[in-house]
Length: 117
Image (cartoon, rainbow, N blue to C red; front, side, top):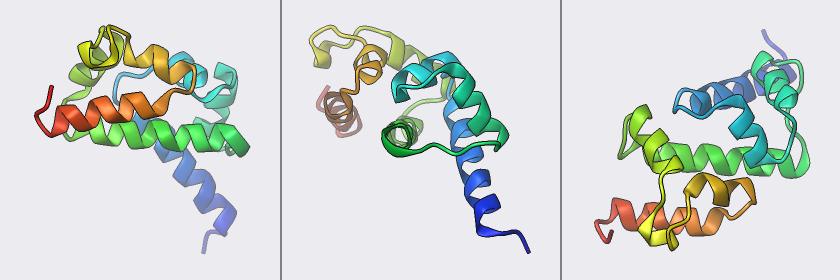
């Protein structure tokens, strides 16, 4: 039976994989969670697990990607994250996520999924 630490590491590896499968690069993910790209690679390999604010931000990004997967395929997620968004005053969602502004992005996704955009 695998120990619980190994299961946690597997869970974070899976989270990184799911985010990356939505056309988010390791460098972009690192910027969004506030770490170096190498740290994301460590999480993806299971050698380390995220801690503190980086863990919180990683889980926020995962939540956002999960919401976007309900609406778009990976290439659509890529376009939505990198394109200017009228509902965000012309800002790009990826830029807001890089500076930790998750709430406006979540609000834009909510409007998107409920047809208000």
